Amino acid sequence: MYRQGLSIKTRGLQLGSAFGFVLYGPFTVLGPMRNTEFSTTIGLFSTIGGVTILTTLFFLYGQAGGKFYQPPANPTVPNPPKELFNSESWTQFQTFFWLGGSLGALVAWFIYSNEFIGKLYEVSLGG
Image (cartoon, rainbow, N blue to C red):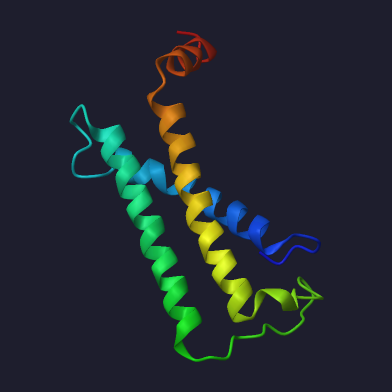
């Protein structure tokens, strides 16, 4: 989020894709429909729904107070990006967060449900 030299759009895509990719597993493997033939598709839609909820919360945060929180400089982030903390940049960030989250979930769904990749996984385990 605070790496130097990234555009707002790239920050949103990277963070969103990480969330979408990571959230897919729990929604698919631990969801209430985990023992059905539709578990992978339901996991995909649930993940996209979760990313949409997070994006809505980001939107509400941007609309709430009018003034954004400016994190102070600290040893781990000596120069926090100032361009992220305004209304226009925040709107771009949340748009690309949703896009990245949806694409991350789609990639996770493709990897998890692709039979060829499943066979490669079995071969790599020695079976």
